[in-house]
Length: 406
Image 1 (cartoon, rainbow, N blue to C red):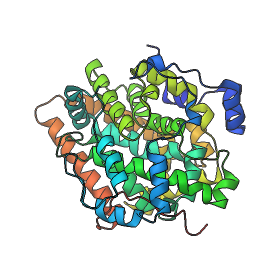
Image 2 (cartoon, rainbow, N blue to C red; image 1 turned 135 degrees about the vertical axis):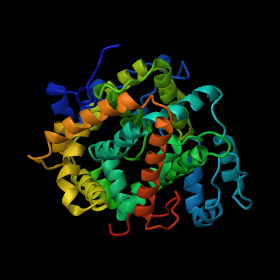
Image 3 (spheres, rainbow, N blue to C red; image 1 turned 90 degrees about the vertical axis):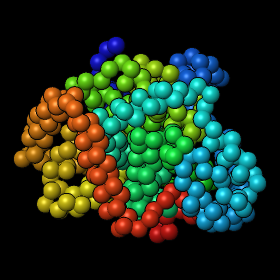
């Protein structure tokens, strides 16, 4: 398999890259959709352009719930629904209950042995995955115009700490040791996220500000979800390749599998979910560049996220945080979202990270080290969530409105 750097993988260079940055909608019309459903977990499909496909099961349901004023009551009932095999609460509307009972089932191709191996992989590689999926994925999201606008003008844009906390709840559930076990929470967080997406598809088109800025009529189509998906597992795997982190073939396959199952659970059609890393890389190369570029909303989101990250330690760490973000996503993307260059740190951060990776690779196989590494990673995760929420319990909830100050 040919090796791609994260910069090559996520941002196509040359004239095509410039075209996409300037006019992503026009670039789409020039290239269309060429990825084959034969390379998906389904192995077949209609080959429809995912830019024109949403969530046929969830979308009309959420529209109905919102129109009926049922969502506040649903949020109250789902507040204490937390674990994968926990029964749904009594009192849910019958149409929502029927949908959720069906949607909570894992796909028939889910492999529990691979899911368990993925949990062990998360234990030993958590520092890399959390860095790539957290600051890395967050910065990439800011450089995706459709996603940046959807975040900014939706209800979550008014309180970015809460928005980040809820995103972290979802991400941490995927990376937990019991993600898809009965006592885990990943099924719950995936399904709640799917309901949120369907609600946003109904609400955002009602926002005049979103309509004026967006180049689509309905947000969060299947391609949008695939783009976000690639900022997580695909970006993480390619980053680990760049960092020369040892990953066995079985570990790579298991890590892909947990994200394949996650994709299906949040409503991505199986004909778009890559079956292999080769298929994932090819799909990423086809869609990432045409969906990335600068926006005012993305610049605001990036600055807000970086400020939050640095303020958790001390505001004086902002230059180092800027350099870390630039290192993770590359100069072109960092320039799009106006991450400042830091003369002192921009050379030091890559060298320091390389040394840390080399040290960690040398000791990770020693007895008890993987468990210790996981414990440290888990403490950091819990600290982040506690800090973001001010120690208050926070859960993913279905919105009932857009950003109130717009």
